[in-house]
Length: 286
Image: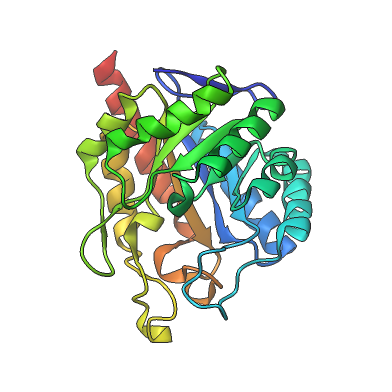
């Protein structure tokens, strides 16, 4: 399996490397909160001696309601992310939704992410791959809720048509199961790794209950917050290369996906567990 390296940050992901943590906020709310969350998570990961990439979205383009908060937009959002990157000293990951966003986002973000619903959009995947190839960063693709693990090979094939440089991470975030529910097949994580790319687990979005938030009469997504640590621990035990998590200082007041994110002060306990599990898995492999 390919091992990827971020030269500017001396971070690697893949076989033989430490668990990579991509964590932060679901969506940017304000610059001060972004700084606080990034500093807190960086300090936790430094104590645990694991690589950290700060995550926050500048736009949530797939909100259930047209009236839901989406974020500050690309221009202001990229300024915030660039400020966090410089002031806190961390690489950043954020998502894109259109081809036009690929180049400007790749100029700031060390990891460009394609949302699950858009993972089969060929023009978007190709534009992102070209931009990331030019920037030297990583491209993380969220596996669609409608895809079996092995179908991710078609996504990888599109990217390899653009660049032969290994750059892609595949991210699991659950599969649609009936109405308003997602499930995670832990065996599928191994199937994805067989395709030759590092695999991460998005334990936050995997506990979503799409369109099932009783607080808004189904105008937003619900979630099962208590399930995040369960899925995160299980995924690391299954051998993933990285974990994707979202936190908030006060999850019940988060402007997006509050029912699925964890309290910021819970980060160290969970990440300590994941580091311990990862060490056992890697020891068994050696």
